[in-house]
Length: 216
Length: 224
Image (cartoon, rainbow over all chains, first blue to last red; front, side, top):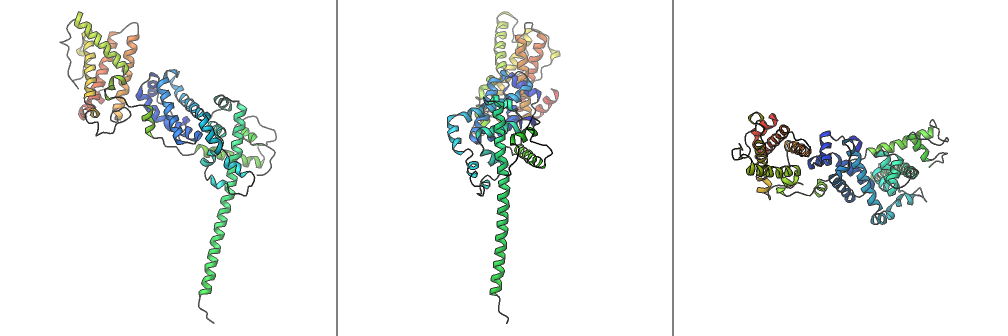
């Protein structure tokens, strides 16, 4: 996956961005857009909103390039702007209303009865990530993928480093539970399928024996 | 899940090299197992596939410019052209006539520094040549001639080739240098002339490419 840390902006392009050169901004878009999209998609869990973030981030780059102090600061600047755009969207009343209804519904449904097959509803880590609360998901992504510290995350989210730590722990608690449960359910499903196969085979054999001509 | 004496936050702290509870023993098999699982999830998160991003996003972020926006795309060049107009005007009013200035039309011969002295008239000639080339560049824009037959890009222009991108980038760089030179208190006329000559050369190359003159294109890119 393309992450910000893997990308180097060539010095000539970076200098062009600081000068406000549109071609240089276009080149920077080509280099960084995917990383911005990955970050925004994973945090927001909504392609349309993520595209908006990509758009707004690069409009900011065009309009506010003079705020960037040096060529090395472009990449972190773009990432920070993208994160802020994501957080703004998460804070919007419209998004909060929508996500409150969905967040952790599946995880919550697993609490009373572990025998329920709930984990298979989240067949991949991508799904499980999406089922975390907005805050937990954002912290997981910023800390474990983007490499932000808890202090930085706290500052970005207007909270404390402790808040970030507790959200990360909550998220991992759920993700580990999901992974363990998924393993159990998949094993159960496999053994059920094998059992059914065997029964089917046995039934066929029995029917075959019944249908065979009597030799006595 | 099995009851354990530690919290996930302790395991995460252990993973990240942060201070953690004394209950967590790094050599405890259960800790090792759970830590492996946590690390595995972290690796999986980092290995999630790319989410494709549509160029449409860029189209919206950078609204297409009008074909005539060659001037707007290079504000320093526009400023320089305005400056050029004032210089030419002053020469016409007070200086030597500019009508004799060698000024080949269109994608003309390369201007040689050796063939010139440092007079203001020659500088004005370069500026004029630069302006004419920019007009020509716009004139041969295929989009302007057959707007319906080409796929427009975000700039309202046909997709530039890699070489065109590079030339445009260098042109913008020269424009920036020219602008800085005019901002400087002491103007170095030789430097100014050299920059305007470089600008003309780059524009000639762009005109040659846009005109589809492959031979010129090759020569220009080699000579620059």
